[in-house]
Image 1: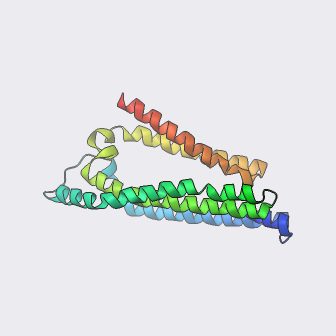
Image 2: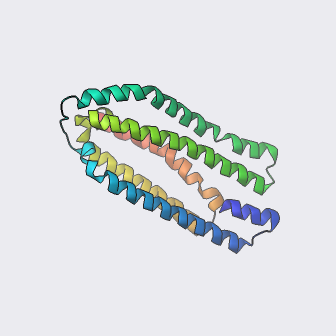
Image 3: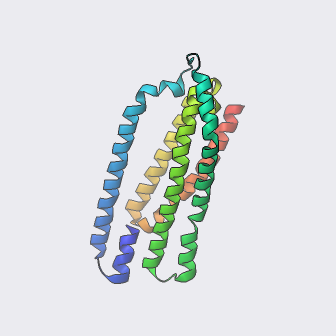
Length: 209
């Protein structure tokens, strides 16, 4: 929406009402696609939810096979995490370029901002994809955060994490709709991500005690 507004300001190609309307339509479509993906993925993984919550015993030879595959994937997992971290850091470069080159050109700056989101998005995909695979190994082996001891603690922490992101989403949408400041409201996600790291650290410290 901010990108369309920049086009409207820079070239008068779109009126402000049309820019806002098109931006809202695109936003709703993207949200609908995301919801459909979440529901579809949830229905497919639902039969295996017990792996996260319940203690179980694997059949003979299964643990050994999973450990072997986990060890083989370890190097790729590390590289994917490094790539994700580097991309998330490099995502700041387009913003710096926009500030250094021409701060008065709204269209150029919005293009750089969009590029920032694209690079950061690719980095997040790297984290998520490798994280899902790695978590699958840990679920089957009941290691890490899916160990038998941690399974007893997950219900409380999961509820807190879900509530946190629900509140962050509500704050983003509420502020954006009330102020119509979509070009700046994205900062809420950055702040929420930083605070979430602190929340996770605090919860982990409490659970260890």
